[in-house]
Image (cartoon, rainbow, N blue to C red; front, side, top):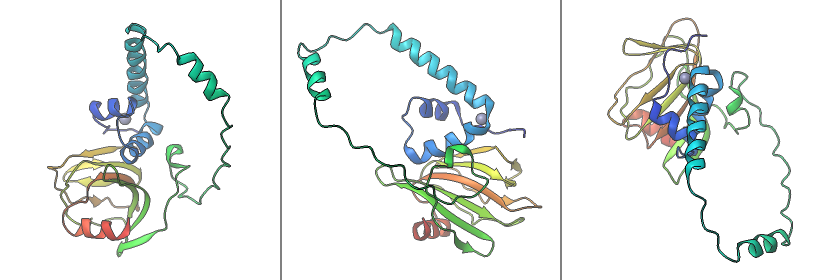
Length: 209
Ligand SMILES: [Zn+2]
């Protein structure tokens, strides 16, 4: 698998330092699962972040800090939460998405389906899977915020640019597009979007995710 399109450096850094919200981080993590280049960037950013922390002078502690820690240790034990049962998932999901609860498949139009993964109301973002049959054109839409797309299966075209398995498309608020699935097989993508896309695509998303 040759990956031609990656998240921007800003997005990878935000992912690494934890400032990317959950839905967006999920799709960047799914990309990093299969991309050695981005994993290397993440490791480098983590190392640089660690060096930066090491260079900071130690913070002054409150005089009662130790007593408070001991008091916390003496407190009631935290209850162990049993692991949630593993949901049934699409077989092609990358490891990063394997422990997510994926909602049921809903048909948006003939040949186009959607399965919600999560909705982050605080940040107005959502993550979902979308599948479209070979040759299908998705509704033309603009964005009110960032939209991150990770290709899990098949191929789609955004204008003349092809996105295949492992590729990542980062569209900002000014990006208007009408992705078209390549010939041969169904295209399945993990998508995270901020806000609701403009137009009919946004209406359908509000109803189905
Ligand atoms: Zn990458």
